[in-house]
Amino acid sequence: MVPDVSFADPDLVSNIKQGDKQAEAALYKKYSDRLYFLALSELHSREDAEDVRAETFTRVLIALREGKLRKPESLSSFMVGIALNVIRESRRQQIGTEPLPDQDLRAASDPSPEKVFLDQEVRQSIRELAKHLKPREQDFLRMYYFEERSNREIALVLGIKEERLRLIKSRTLKKFREIIRNFRAE
Amino acid sequence: MNRSMTHKEIQDHEVIEQYVRHQLSPADRQLFQEHYFGCDECFEQVQLMSRFVAGVRDGSSSGVFAGEQGKSVASTNRLRTWFVPALAMSFLIAAVLLGVWVLSLRRENQRLAQQSSEQREAAERLRSLGAKIRELEASGTESQQEKESLRAEVNRLKEQLAATGQPEVAQRRTPDVNLPAINIYPLGDTQRSTGSGDINRVNLPPAARSFVLILSDSGGTSSNYRVEIADTSGRTLARRAGLKPDKQGEVSVSLDRSQFSKGRYTVKLFAAGKKVSEYVVEIE
Image (tube, each protein chain N blue to C red):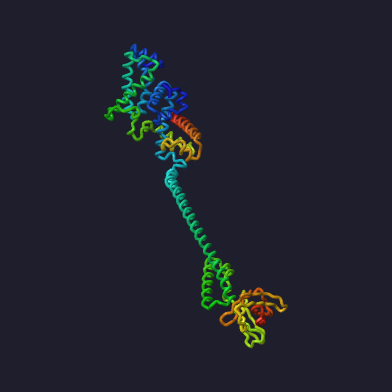
């Protein structure tokens, strides 16, 4: 049974150095989702993200057990650094070329990288969201996120001020959050 | 961006959205990743934003977010592709047409200026011809050939002026070449142009502005005559001096019709100060 541990990073580092397995489990629980999300947003592949997560945790635990982290308060930065290294190595292995610069970490070859975040719940929420939007608001979302037009151009086409576009964006996102929470509640 | 991102910076600069849309620099991207590793709120928001953006893009491609512009965006883009070039072309055509119009106006001005100059020359020539004709008729030395030549030139000038749209000018400035010329005979002479007795009856056309009296059978042998014309009250209406007789010894005098209304007049011919003959004329 894993205790509900919410140690602060310095405590986790210290305990893992001392061989505390519960601290290691707590570390995994604390950062697993974040590591997976980071890898997913970089590689756009669930399988690859799983691999990166596993490899990253392995390396982090080894380093913590050996007391290699001098600043325990920088644990999150340390983990992100290792994860990004693992991601670069992973892409290097996939492409088989020289190490890529940081800018090319994302899977540029994938035509729809965001689909990894698309599931049935999202699709249903989006359809529900569209019902609550005015035609002009729908136009804005399509032109901004899909056609990737500038605010200025969208304001010109829709005949509204640029300041109003920000309001539309925040309102639609807020509505989407409400809808998707209701789906989960159901 | 700073070495570590603050929550406020992330909110103010819309970092979450930029992260999801891959619009951050690699350094800022890593900074934000390090931030949401330790910030539950930002981690929740970035997950939500990732799903939201993915959903909107999927919905846009499948037509969920058609909106008002969804159907007309394509037409708007088509409009943009042809409207601006069409507008530019129309301005260009208008500029070209304006230039052509200005050029045509200049040419017209030049033509009108030249025409005006030609008219002035023609009118001046008519004036001089008219003066010459009157001089010749007064002297009585003009020949028939000379008359016809002058008449032909006057007619040509009249036609020229009329063609330039100034018939009134041509009319005004043309001397009355085909003017009535009437032989009159002195008192006591048996011959008459018209009428009977000593009275010479003269019937002038209504349009005649002037007329010529040819004093025949004067009996004079001088080379230089003077004529005086008076009405019935004895008032002298016209005088002419330095008149030369023609080969027939006749003296011609050109008179302005406006000075002689219907009525009787006395024409006296003088040579060297003495009356040579006297005529009576009845203008009818």
